[in-house]
Each structure stands twice: as C-alpha cells, then as structure tokens.
Image (cartoon, rainbow, N blue to C red; front, side, top):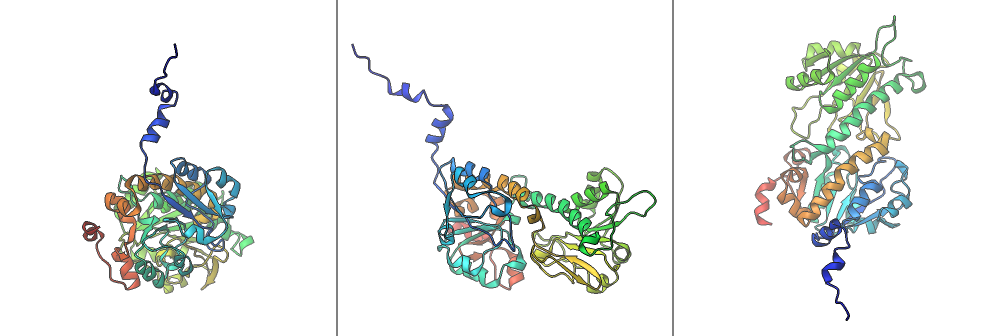
Length: 402
C-alpha cells in the first residue's frame, strides 16, 4: 500500500523563523546608495552588514561601484551582502528611496523620479535654495538624518555622530597644536611642572560632553559654556567631577576666550536653540596660534569668522587664530561613523517597509515625521523655511489629505 504524505509534514522540516518570514510578506523597497564626492564626504549610511540586514528581508539595494572605497569597503563586500552593484549613478537615483550623506545637488535631483524620497544630512551650508525648490516641484519627500527622533524622543543620528565628533574634535585640536601642522608646538593636556593647555567648549550636548571628557583625560583645563543650566548640571554629573561650567555670560566668556588654547563650538540651532555667535571682535582677542574648531558650521556656525570648508581643505587662519571648519568632522573616521549610521538606518528602512512606503511612515511615526522637511513637495519645517526664505506648512495639517 502506498502511503500518502501529509503536505504539512514537508513544511515542518523548515525552521519556524523561515515560515514566519514567508507569511509576513512586506512591500518591497528599492533603495539607492550613490557614490559620494570624496572631496566632501567619505561616509555611507549603510555598511555591507547593514545592506545584508535589508536584503535578507527581500528589499533591493543598489550601490554605485566604488562607493565604499573611502571607508575601506570593497564592491565585493557589498555584492556578497546582496547589493546590486551598478556603474551609472542614474541607476542608483532611479530607486524609490535614495540614501546618502551629503545633501543632494541639482544634478542628482534631476536623476530622481517624481514623488521619490531622499534621506540625507541637512547641512544647510551645502544645500541650496534651488535644490529645495526642485524637490518641491518634483513633489518629493525629503528627510533629514539630524531631525529624526526615536521612540525615546531623542535624536539617534545626532547622538551617535556627536559622540564620534566629540572625540574627533579633541584629536584634531591636538594635531593642530603640534609643530607639524603649524601650531605653537603645544601638547594638548598637561605634564608635571607645566601649566595645562586650556580648552573652552561651547555647548554642553553630547559632543561637548565627550570632548570635555577626552580633554580632561589628557590633562587639559576645560571650561564649558551653554545656554541651558540643566545641561551644565548634567555634564558635571556625566564627567563625575567638578569642572568649570558657566551659562553664556559675556564677561566670563571674554576672559575664557582670551586665555584659551583651543575653542570647540558645538551649539546646535536647527532644533530650536537660541541663536548665539562669537563675534569677530572676540576672535581677535584670542591668543595667536589658538585653535578654533566649529562643529556647527553646517547650521550657520558658532563664530562670525567661520567659513564652511571641505575635508580636503579644512584649515585657514584669521586674525592669527587657526580655524578648522567642516560640516562633517566625523568623516575623518569614515568607517566608524558609517557603522554607527548603519546601525540606525537598517532598522529604519525595515520600519518603512512595514509601513508600506516613506509617505506612510511619515504619517504613522511621529519620530520619523519630525525628520521630514519636505512632504509630498511641501516644505514642512519652519526653521528651514526661515533660513531659505520659503513659506512652510505644518505637516500635521497635510496628513489628513493623503
């Protein structure tokens, strides 16, 4: 007698996880990762490991050849992770979602389809008014990395990158103080019998906190200024020791700047902080050969003398003060930064897929919605609208119509 096999018996041979993935089919995403201009940017938002997480769920990721080279990732590594490697940038920008670091250029936007979506850094100093208007004309969705919130209502990209930037800023300051880079030949920190170098930090956020911790560990004398007294209390608790802190009081700051060997500016404005800028007259009072690092130059800068530069040409001297002003100081450690970003964006992409599309994700998630500055061609961020002189709307008023 021939025994008939129960169809369920064959299915029982597969792991339960495979069955669940087969059942829980989600809409498939098309994601493009273009090659960045290495003179301006060296990071990517997804490493091969992040690509593997996304492609294993059935989504298509298109990576332009050579995109990972600045971070020492080969095309083969991306290909083995499941990415489609393409030569022409137009194939990458044809994806429904483009994921890049630097803000889009006019040329890049012209390659994108209408109603497509782009996720990138905002970097106001590198994003033109024409780009904003073109995205609006093409009814696109644009999401800024820095503005995305998580379930804890914090900014995951800002927090992660700020931690890297805080460490990197001190490394840059130490490098610029040396004779090799035209500095005064000082050691950042202190040794027995010699007065320690003085580091002034403007902004008690994550980057400022990490920079202060690193500078203190090297033996430097650190002074921290911020608008918010609560942040100053928090940073003292974080550092675990008494350190000089002050609200931004003109007389106190003037004295601190006059004696500082390095000043690190990290006051962020795009999320609503009061505007503050150190005037050119105050910069003139600083010591000759002092170091000034502006980590907020992408949002207008902390110093009147700041000029937005690139990684290839980040340093200039003004009034005897050495300036280091780039909007992406963490790109000096591109691989570490890319790994941090990939840990954030791989889950975000899967959540977008669960929602069905970027437009639905904006509608369903308040945190993701906070990152949107253009929604279906409408500018929906008041601060960005004010910066570019373009009328903006409240995104919550637009959602019922979509």
